Image 1 (cartoon, rainbow, N blue to C red):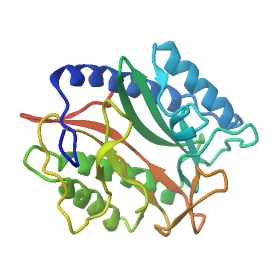
Image 2: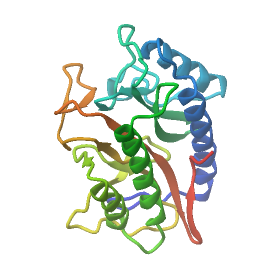
Image 3: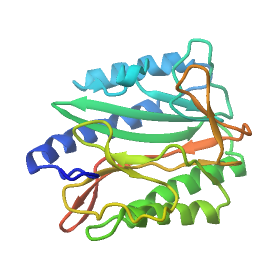
Image 4: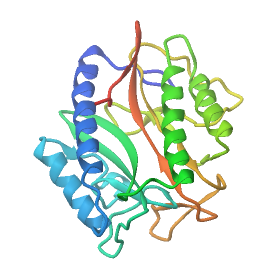
Amino acid sequence: MGRNYVIHTSEEIKRIRVAASMTAQAREQIAGSVRAGMTTYDLDQIAGEIIRSMGGVPAFLNYCGYPGNICISVNDEVVHGIGSRSRFIMEGDIVSVDVGVSFNGAVGDSAKSVYVGKGPVPPELQKLLTETERSLEAGIAAAHKGGYVRDISAAVEKVANAAKLGIVREYVGHGSGIKLHEPPDVPNFTMLRKGPELQAGMVLCIEPMLNLGTHKVYVEPDGWTVRTKDGAPSAHFEHMILITENGTEVLTRV
């Protein structure tokens, strides 16, 4: 372990791979369960059941006091939304599910945003979803041994800027694997510092959070839910990657 990054052992990586694979499967099942008319509390309970049915534990539950099984963020909610019995999911909503699974001393972390509705996705919302996911893939493509964290940040930022989307600055990607959050931070915008050199054994969560309007956000009185300041919709996609000697492995790809 270095001062500002973590190199995982081969034994840890075996366990991380399993937890990440479980997370990817849970993410897809949970995202596929989103329906208009259900509450976000309903979705949170379904998520807990899915994770536990795999033998895992919801990694976010009670993490720093967080009260939900997963994070469910709707429309202008960026991240960390808490399932609520009074919040109904409606046709036309964008719903982000951020899923963490703990299993056998390792953890997986991944997120996906989906549009709720039977008709065509409105063009602006389609752009938001498509370009946010594309920025994630660009960040993954820029991650390789011998590069730097800033290479990932620059790749995400380039796609977001070209699409004229707001890049949330207060919340960033991070290391993960044995603990939910490990160093280093992985910003979605370019900083002056290159950040740590990418080395085999590093596990990173790349997670662009992009907004249709301003990059500015605020936190609700619940102390968790992050919203866009102008009320514009936000999207969030996240994959967990492993830097290897021979390339980059996406651990949460289905």
